[in-house]
Image (cartoon, rainbow, N blue to C red; front, top):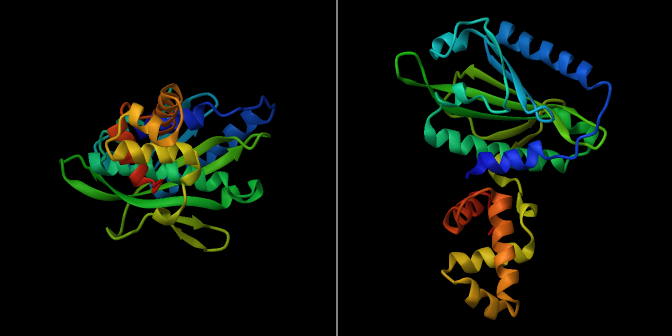
Length: 250
């Protein structure tokens, strides 16, 4: 498992509410996605976390990248656009998922009424129809929330980039305020005890040694270890330490 599984855990298992206006919200946001594809020649991916599906509109960039003919529309039963992901440089795809995890935690700490003001922006490398990597601007917005404050609809946009130097940024489109993504705190993903145990794991200590060092039972250590793997959505402790460092958890 990897970061994308962590995002699945956080996004798809939110305590969504049932609301009559949700169909109307989706239709309104679908029109927004179609407009971006038409006006900017973008690939616009509208993902519905509650339904675990995506509506994708392909502008001219889709032909440039050799993905599909422009003006095509698809509905897929996933919030992840795998056909598009297949064109992203593997290193950038991994970073993209980490960026989205950071952005999601940033948004959760914002007042509900201001969450739609923020979007994530960064450059990624994507393989075009000739096999050459080109720079693509990736932007992500959370467009709709339910009564519980759960992020229900997200919009990802892919456009050809005019610059290769764009930093990973969170931008407030209403005020122009800019935040450097890597400086955002994701420290609340793990509890203090989980961070403490993960640091000891990183030092090479086994569960029995950690239990003795912290004066807790080995069963408690193993439970914390399992919680760490589930929260970071990784399959082993080595990968957990790697992801934790990427997120500045210790």
